[in-house]
Image (cartoon, rainbow, N blue to C red; front, side, top):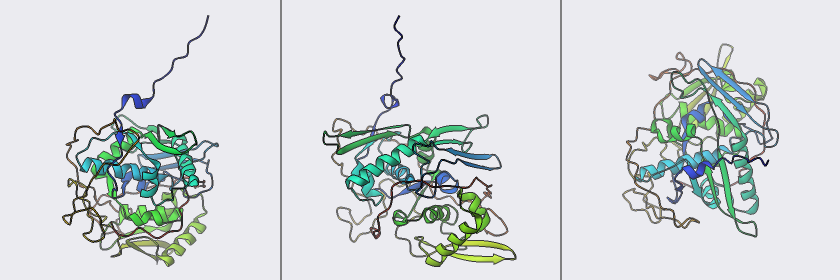
Amino acid sequence: MSSRRLITPSERSKLDPFVVATGDASPRDQRDLMERPFFSLAKAKRTRPILYRTGDVCVEVYAVPEHGMATIWDADVLIWAASQIVEAENLGLKTSRFLRFTPYQLLIAVGRQTGARDYKLLKGALARLQATVIRTSIRQGEHWRRHQFSWINEWEECARRDGRVEGMEFVLPDWFYRGVIDRSLVLTIDPAYFSLTGGIERWLYRVARKHAGRQPRGWLFEVAHLHEKSGSLAKPADFAFDLRRIAARQPLPGYRLSIERRERRELLRILPSKSFTAPVDGAVNHLGISGVQAIGTPGVPVSGFRECTPRSTLWPETTIARPNLESNLESNCCSGPVRPEDNNSDASPCAEAPSTKHPTQQSLPLPDRKTRGKR
């Protein structure tokens, strides 16, 4: 008697594809990912889990030895996906968790090269994003305590016989997708973010953007609290030393850092500066508005409306369906202070507790290059 194996159909067969054809999009990040330790901050492989808990919020991140944990460089894929989804919805287009795109689109948007090695590294990033398992209580309902998912449910590449990759598609988890289409959970970020080469620098920019925004007095953190918040595996003294070196170099676009001391406490103040290369505080609920400049922007009218011409894709038979007319909320909500006595803000406090320390892993390295200028 022969046994028959039950074959589960692909999740993609149940979803309408969102074909990325909107051109450039202002980079946008998901707020929950900006303030919690979801990623490894180093390029060496990390298999030790992140176990973070504060109050009723918990974040657990697990990796498999074969691939290691997804890194903050791998998170560029999620930033790019969120940017494309928000841009398409701003243009009245229907989106989906099922994305179809060309690797060239993604690599160029996040400031990478497009050689064979870069395509190989992209596939490595997708493998880590799929292999990393997250358990979290963030954004769960009253009777639901924990959600488990991977950053990418499944992915596939379309390649020629010579091995050249021409198209890709992947499916995002529902938890992430819902956090993107809810505009109160999305923030625009400076395109210069992609030129930051250090893991702590990248993480620190996201923390600065999430907490300090453009508040005149910025935000004040205890260094020990930042160490817990990062999920880093570095010793607290080494982590503090890294922060001092970053503050001395001032690499964060749009923010200035300074070290302060109060009694025996060492603190890091994050202040907004005027050196933003992009309008990171604009709302995202205006149809077609991109905030582009009138000079040096070919094909875009002076009014600021983005010219949206479709790009060639491998799926010409696929069209982007009816507009999604859901109302869009303001994207730039201020976060409350971790320590009310240190941060003068009207927002609700957002205190966080320690996570385990944080190792490293290999991912998409950033080439040395200058930022692509203003958007």
